[in-house]
Image 1: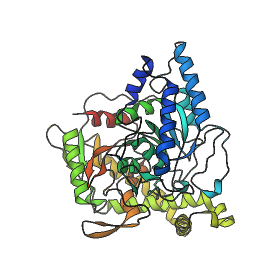
Image 2: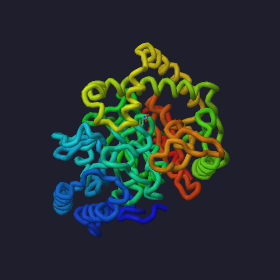
Image 3: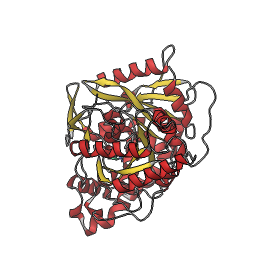
Image 4: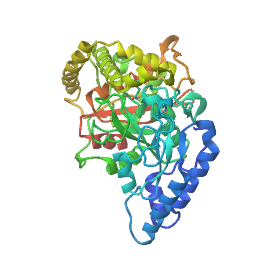
Length: 442
Ligand SMILES: NC(=O)CC[C@H](N)C(=O)O
């Protein structure tokens, strides 16, 4: 368990909505609970970089006034939310976790923030992001690292680490994140909560600072998958396609992707069996070499697109980047243009290869992350007697779905060594509800 519970630990958004509608609590009370818990716990966690107490209380008062006059906006009405510091929120600083944006204040809301507000949600503040979202560890940010509520010496994962830590510690029941290679799902898994990114483009990325535009997805983090779905219904840019009937689920053997901690893989598989299967799970495999093709395609496209975003800053003020990030960007800048063109072409071949995986199944299940949370700043870790690099381990089972733009959900799947692990579910584009349906099957 996280070291200490917060005001929203174990309270679903559905139960908060009921309490609000039936007069057992008010939006102001919920906002105050969030703000007090942040003031008390966040110095230890580093989940928030900006707290907007005045704005949150004003929005909460408006939400209560609406309820008093019979206007109910839906389940997010009066619910406190955290927003990753990569999204624009009008009147609040947006640092992107970088000294390059120290002092920058956004003048309008990102589209997803507008939709959250329209649904009645109360923005309490901005959450820590790995600098420019370029890193799955969550521990390199101009604002300091976000820490794991299960063990603050360990990383939250990233890059939406502050959002995951805030929800896992029960400081807020819901947070927005972005996911370019796993940045919603990785910290959600390492912090023991649910995280969801829909198909590419299904939630608008307008007003969100880019990392690599071809792969950038907006997603949500919450205590469980039902809460992720509630939020997604408010954020989706198109009508959700309701899928009838139970989903056919298969376990995707993860060994082609990464030689992870066998205890993590076993724990996740056991969770998948008990949660998803009535009588054993089918199993599917990636053909040999496919994992490497995905990695190469992902790395080349992300590298070139990230450099396109940052080239001017790299030339004009390189000293303002975190040194690790600058080194990664400089390595990325060496990728020749022909490799980008080849990777874009490879992407459609990979989509065909993946389509075959879904021929006989609707949902694939696999670990979200094949290791537990490493220590802050740790870049190599011992796994089953071997030394493995932390960053590739964190990204190994999530980034391929960004290459294809497929919907993916992570749900808590127990613990290993007292640290949480996550079960990841993936499906075809546009079929998001399949994931929630599968996760809810007993
Ligand atoms: N932002 C993300 O989704 C993960 C981090 C990033 N893809 C990296 O390579 O480090």
